[in-house]
Length: 342
Image 1 (tube, helix red, strand yellow):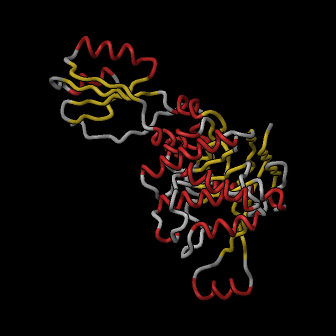
Image 2: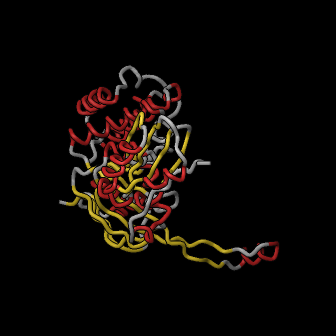
Image 3: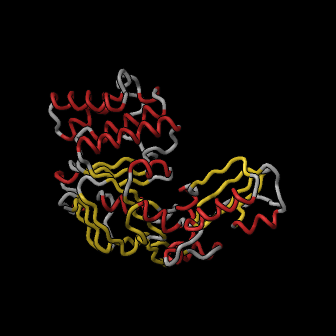
């Protein structure tokens, strides 16, 4: 059963046009002309209860605008949205108690007060009884590793601790749907891993639905089996992360360490060279040709070490965004940093 249904969703903003110079400023003051900018165009998808879905796109693709429409912060220009059985922009109390929105660059905790004071305010807003409030705070504090931190002023917490406290505040009313917009933004590697583990465990315990946007691909690969990709306001992929990587990464990277480096032209017969560094050579090899290529290399050259890896997911997703809808019509080869081979 779908807990989020989006049907032909669109959002258009009027943007004023001003001619340059003083005359343009006067004209703009008395009579303004506008052009329409489509931030989101004809987006449709459904998300089942309990799913964790990645929502990806380059800057300006329409991700945050879509999240704001799903949470009722802005009114859509076209289409229909239902979240947890409600129309978001009506902002009914019953709807607001079922969702939460966490934005990595925004904070709701009061800077100079202990975090527990902000939590008490949230409890009052959501009408959470004191007994349930204490139980949830204890439970989430244990899950987040925030013991003895809630009584400190927020400004004295580390960035990672503040983000965890923000998560606690956002989840205090135990929402069914979590909208996460860059929840690990700016955190160090250990703090990112801690937040990811918490979200995984929270989803497992409460079967909460999570729609996650992040520029850290480790967040997506760790939490999401399904991804939505948007480009210039349009949705052009909705499917499994595994299928996406297979579709856009028909090549694998083969790194070979040779005892002696032969003529570079002869090496090109084994596949496309992506770089040479000392006696180490990187090739891009079609997946179906990998076995035969490795066999040839071992038989014909003095190989001291050999590794086969998939291209980094960041490069694959980056290539998808570069090509957009046009690139989706055909498999494409990921971009690799070329090194001078001569």
